[in-house]
Length: 289
Ligand SMILES: *Cc1c(COP(=O)(O)O)cnc(C)c1O
Image 1 (tube, rainbow, N blue to C red):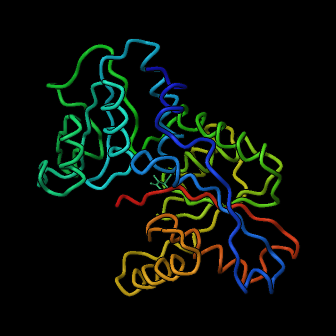
Image 2 (image 1 turned 30 degrees about the vertical axis):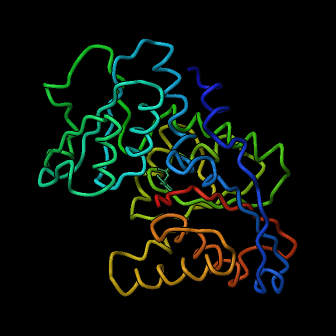
Image 3 (image 1 turned 120 degrees about the vertical axis):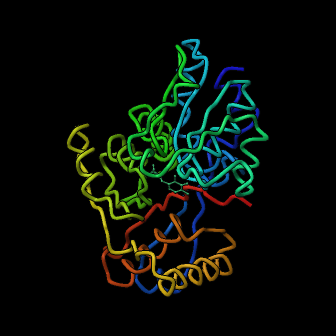
């Protein structure tokens, strides 16, 4: 099945845009819209399809025998890859961080195995080098970097930008940053919009390095909502996500979209945006239940 057919049959594209309302937005005379990429598919959710699309197409057109990628035990990227390759009848291999783990360590790994992804567990120190184990090395493998980062991932975001442009023009956009592929893709293809990236890890230097190397200027990045790993702060995010869900009937999770919306509310309350501004927040998905 080719990519266009696959999208038509399995995916909800283009994803909808919805406005959300809040007394705070009214007070500050701001309108907030959400690009619901979380509705693209329950498993190949959010930015994961956008980032995989060009890789899958390349694999189909170039007789790639297997796709190899990397991730942690809860990687949304590997999870989506396992499912897509299952549907398309392609061979996939996941190299997972942590040699103390096995295919029964959590329900996601179990599920990925059930979708026929071959899982290899390597130690955390080995993982830093990301070796391809001898046993799985073979000609015509396509290797996708950790978290799906890469030129093809960035290129895949153009499709998202086209959907946004054909909908309407926004002064601002906001999205969470993991590897930064989504953020850099947006910066590359939406030059009229001010795009705010909310870091979820302390990897600003890496994002800036990639930006320079690829010649994609960064617009605005905030490291104010990383929170760190302290339980007390994690509670703040969990509570925020629950309240957000109750208020807007839209599920978010604390790692990516929770931090982004928390940051958005904070920036609005601190008058970061001029009155009259319209902001588009990208819901990058990540809800696995
Ligand atoms: C993977 C992921 C991200 C990070 O995207 P990058 O392109 O790696 O920055 C953001 N949100 C969700 C829900 C994700 O699963």
